[in-house]
Structures are given as C-alpha cells and as structure tokens.
Image (cartoon, rainbow, N blue to C red; front, top):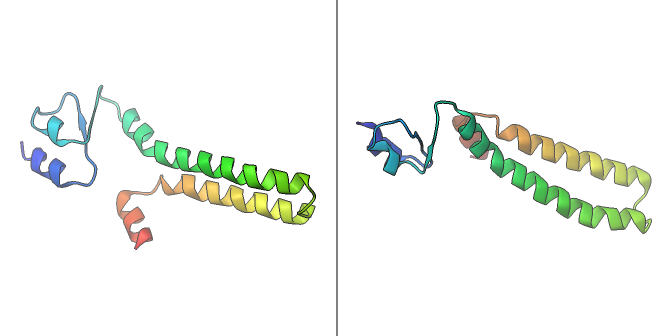
Length: 106
C-alpha cells in the first residue's frame, strides 16, 4: 500500500489493473492484463508522432524544392540522409531508460 504516494509523486505512473486499488487512482494510466505491451506502446507513441510530423513537414518543403530544380541532386541526397538520421535518432531515444534520457537533456 506504499505505492500510492510514490505513484502520485512520480512524473508519469502506470498501474496494472490487478494492482492494489489504492494505486490505480494515483496512476496516470491503468493498463489491463499482465503483459507490459501497453507500456511499450505508450512509450513509443510520442516518437512515432514526432517522426511522422517531421517527415510530412520535411517532404512538404523538400519535394517541391527538388521538383523545381532549386536543389542539386547532391544537396537533396544530403538533406534526405540528414532527415533519415534525425528520425532514427529520435526513434532510438525512446529505447533509453528514463534516467539516461534525463541525463541527456541536462
């Protein structure tokens, strides 16, 4: 029963539906079942959205520039490679532990 205060104090907390009834209201989210798949999905959603928005924005700007011939093929290839690296790094960032993410941001 000591979990409820720590859940309330945490930045983000997830509670299992079969956990003690005191921890469920204190958690930010409650997931059903005994598997951690919902946790992985919840963690992965933010980078997926960010990557999708970035890709749409990048292509909305870069494709017309390339079609109009305002960028050489070398510049277009370098820009696309850079965008791919940014998207990959953003996706890999979600695989780090929360303590590593906090150390990276500070």
